Length: 168
Image 1: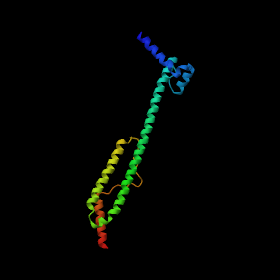
Image 2 (image 1 turned 135 degrees about the vertical axis):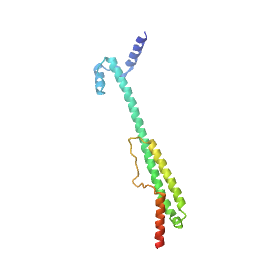
Image 3 (image 1 turned 45 degrees about the vertical axis):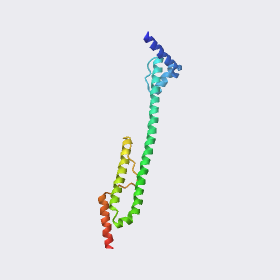
């Protein structure tokens, strides 16, 4: 009795399917187009097509979701690229503003702090990018990106500048 009821419910569901109105030949053509097995009676073909249709719908939804995630990722990458450009531009502008102070010799501590802050910002941006990045993607680095100098390099440059000034 339970088995018969389940069979009836199954048939009722199948009869509501748009595939049920088609002939067996048409159902087999649809199965062939979707690379599904062609064997079985009409009910089995309809059930197979319904299952395939629900899987295809889920795949389409997943593809749409992946596409949206890709768009969001691209926006994030371009945002990060813009942020790095702003940091680099800010670095150049800050250097121009600080040149008079460098000549006075007050600047070593500020430069050290700035380098640490800029390095932390870049590392934080890189971590965020890495955490949100999909494994198949490559890092996009701006063409004008220059790595920050170490404190030792800055000190060497200053010493060289002082020597040049003494020679003059």
